[in-house]
Image 1 (tube, rainbow, N blue to C red):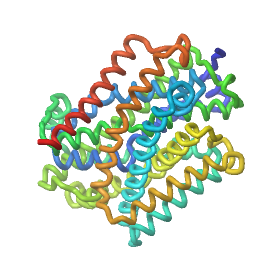
Image 2 (image 1 turned 90 degrees about the horizontal axis):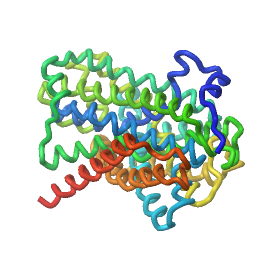
Image 3 (image 1 turned 45 degrees about the vertical axis):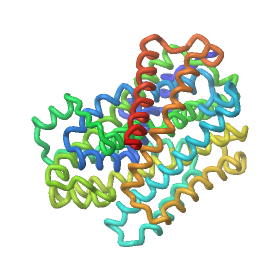
Amino acid sequence: MAGRNRKDSAKNAGESGFGAILRRGIISGAADDDPSAIGTYASAGARFGPDILWTAPVTLPMMFTVVYLSSKLGQVSGRGLFQAIHDFYPRWILWVVLVGVVFGNTVEAAADLGGMAASVNIFVPVPVPVLVTGIATIIFLLQVFGSYELIRTIFRWLALTLLAYAGAAVLAKPDLIATLKGTLIPTVQFNKEFLSILVAIIGTTLSAYLYTWQSNEEVEEQIAEGKTTLRERQGASSEDLRQSRRDILVGMMFSNFIMYFIMLSTGASLHASGQTHIETAAQAAEALRPIAGDAAGFLFAAGIISVGFLAVPVMTTGAAYDIAQSMGWKGSLNATAKEAPKFYVAIGVVTVIAVGMNFLNFNPMEALVWSGIVQGFSTPPLLLLIMLMTNNRRIMGDQVNSRAMNAIGWTTTAAIFAASLALIATWFN
């Protein structure tokens, strides 16, 4: 298999210094902190305060492992995740996993659109359904008429808006001792409410859409370099994979950093003031304003709006990638709508369904948390397949997982299954 040098590609593209930091890992890291994740973290912080902060450092190695393995699969095999499942596994496995992942992506995209619209509504007094439709239309037009390079550039800069949550946390003035204790000493409550939030946190930090997006982004980058055939894309050098690990580690640390400060900001303000239950992402932003100041509330709402424009197309495009690869259609953001019509129709259908779900009068914050739970249940089987594929020499050649990577990967898989089973157990008690 022919290797490729990612450093040369970055140099040729004119990336250096700060631009080099904003690589593929940052996009996936920022997309992981979508409005659903923000809603879940805000709800967790408000309900449990600093006692929930330990979930951030604990999930970091899990986040890095699953996204890196997805990246590695795309680089070495030259295939997106569902293309690999299509080529190497029975059809019944493909369809079962496809249904779960597309359902999870659509539900989360719907919840994210609702969360964005509710946040925009704080500043613009327009009915939320109208805002949902307008936002979705803008995003869809960008996907259809924007080039892959344009979309990638926009995503990279939108990612930086998430730094607003660090500012919101500082303005909330958290208690230092309680913060350190909550960060370093895990506290677990064996009840339905806590386990639901825990599964939602795991589900939204390890969302299935990240796996498909990361593997497909690797393929898209190679296509953009002119490697349009599978044979040309197959293979990655050790240097490629080292660079990928660095990129993704930076991205996941960024995502985890934001996750931590969202929980810290709502824990230090809402939980501390007795507001332990919030019903909408917009309410979280509004509630922060009198407690932590207008700036904190504004930063919280602005972050939801900005990152939604990054995350929603990742989900809808990710679902379209999965469908196209499963059905054998051409699917690439490097292709025009005329060249890959079914792929873009799939994006449109997923977007329309996500918009339509917002007309069902569901509670936006509950939808955000439940979308995380849905992702929590769809993630374990997909991660299991990723572990099997990245240890399969037919797919990966000599670049199968190391013992250390397998140890972390299988531990992550077991932890996700255990959390989901624990939540199910509480439903019968």
